[in-house]
Length: 229
Length: 237
Image 1 (tube, rainbow over the protein chains, first blue to last red):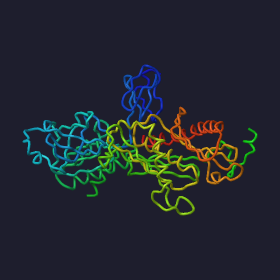
Image 2: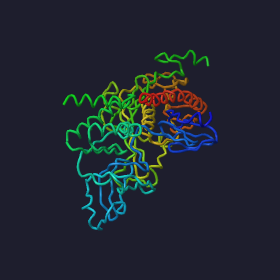
Image 3: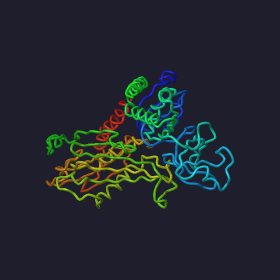
Image 4: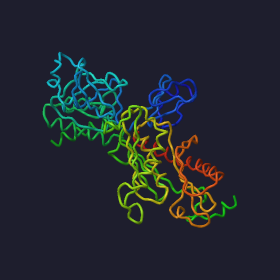
């Protein structure tokens, strides 16, 4: 097997299964090198590109990755920032310097208090936990709207190929939707009815997540829902 | 091997024949990973929760994660109702299951965290701990926890002088001749043993034979486990 032939070829692997043999490949996430073999250490889909082999897990708890946008709840305040619960095994931390504007040392609670929801981006996963930022557009404390939770493994379905699904939902409902990779979704619309429609649409997608051509089906679903009104 | 050919097992199986095995992944919707595994009438389900933060804090291990198994036989799993809740036997089997699974888990990636595995026996006809370990291995893989490899578990029995694979209840209670010896063995595909128990009398020569038998049987079990995992993802594609 040459590298180009196997490109974009995905196969299901289980822990301990040999994915590739030979020195042409590098072990990436979810894999390990044993002798001259690349072995999977996770259950999921194995992918190879430019010689780098990785296993993408499709079940289990949310595994944070750098660059992910997540939605979390403020769990605690410290002198240096906020501890955020993002539904992952490790806790996340939002340091003071990653918040836009001036924050007085004793005024953390005025910006965000325990129990507040926040949309943030993961900027680093170090030895001592996950670091977040809200210094980007669309991120920050969530003041109003609706937050729903879905299985984090279904998030790619809700977003669709290059955002096709999420753009369809936004267009059809006129709501602003932020999908956290950890499975929390923030819906903000003008009317509560619109927000509830988005919730219903997302529930429809998660239930039907196995079918192909789902974007078309959701389009039809929206039309049907509109006629009912 | 003429004795092996003429040897009659209570349910008419060959000495190296397993009961019908079944496995399914993803059966507990609220768990992070789950699986069912059965040997004939013995059915085990396993549910994995975590990795998540260990509570209370003083039980946290900053060096590596903790695996916590809970084995329990449901009250209706045997013909005489058993009292629900932990017992001396279930506590022991829980610990044994932890030891059988820990060597394959890459638990050092989850310091201060715990992975909970709950094993319930829905129906028992001997070999419950083996069915439990098989289901737990599947459920751990399904939960996306990094593992070096899979493990498969089987019980080898010695009925009088004859070694047999995958004992059932009638065989466990065998009384003729030397009586019954029960040897549950858990091993990986390259033949590494992570768990071996022995209840009865056996010579070292026979024990080596038993391990060889287990090696063959675990290959069969592994194929069932592999199929269950692969089929569960195929549905989603």
